[in-house]
Image (cartoon, rainbow, N blue to C red; front, side):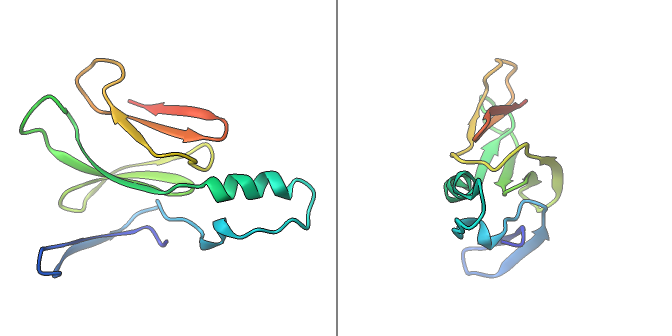
Length: 124
């Protein structure tokens, strides 16, 4: 994926398109056991899981603005529903599970948890 995010209306007409850094290399699913340690890397690459989710900034407020979260192989991007990039964060490792969105610290804002091979990483 090139990291492009596109919004279309119900008739299929493009509303907007923006390029983010949350893309991924299509070779992530390839397998090459020719080098030492390659098997570990192959397992990690095969477990890679990109994600796209829509979430409310303040989930308990009915009119809370909605944002789009896009998780690639090295970067996570947050966009407005109008296509503006609000944040981009470099990830410590490949995400290997679905992203979890919830208010984990009780401050009323949605927090983001990304699972990698090294553990769980929280963004509040």
